[in-house]
Length: 432
Image (spheres, rainbow, N blue to C red):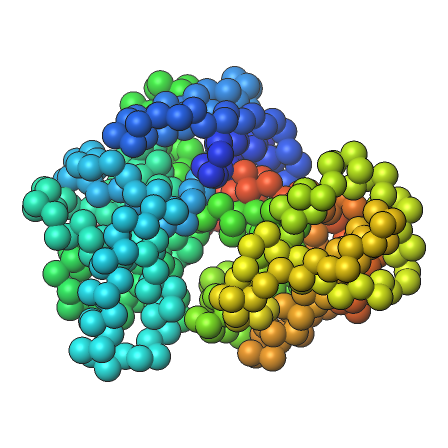
């Protein structure tokens, strides 16, 4: 019997899922994050990691074959030669390194790489590369030996091998996922010695250390795998495996991820591609979504009113539901104003118009991805809070012109457990 554990370090908490060889969920547990000072985050993450692993029942732990971990994209730590943090982590949304964006822009100008494949993914105040460049200007940088992404460092605590990452986390570090190497311009920078070795997500890195095996009563052969990001892990939880299949996340915003045979990137629309083996996961995100609905309706009202919507009929209302001005995808207009008028007296008619308009925006988003070269859409799986709204599903299927179904699994911990399951027939990486 083999079982596999996936651990999700998201934005609000951490979760673990354990599956068997057929992908059946055996156990799960979660722990919401407490508010702790930045300087204490690494210790808090370590405590949470070991607590979640200890929560696996003793029987399943005896058969634990592989572990994989996901973390929030561009959450990074600067560590010494022993893998110990030398400064507080910079979280995924930390923009204090904004000044280093211009430093990086100057690098692109100097080497005449206006259209470098990774340019649009790293020219952001929150990218891993910009954060590393910012750190390199501080006096403490002389103590640094490794840059770890959150998932890298948590995995290191289990397998003890520093300086290894995956190509999902490393995309915003400047790693070229098309060529599977760091570009020459990046390797010429003074920060290059700190860049991690990059392998495919799910690659076995090594067995748990004897100390970890003893502390958690794990099999000494249990492998720790290269991880991924939380958003990619949520996609991996879905049944989407073929080009043309997609996942729409109906949360506070509207996030589209389309599996494609071709790589697509467009900085103006915030579109970029993650490698998934020999395929590409092309994504874009709109600012419309459930947060707008919550401005007007309670959860109970949404359920009751949705049941009364004539979903087979198209609404005559044409909204662009936003909380505030500005949109990037599928329309690139930072000044785009919310359009929420006229507002009918009948709340059913109003909600129908909102859901119809969001479905139109979703359809336009997939059309933009396809116009830029992505594989044509053929099936959409739905995740997020809106996945259970039957009226919305009917409206979306009508607008999209493809089958729309609820994803049976959408949590990132489950997707990461499936990633760990891939390790069963793979040898550990070669040491360098």
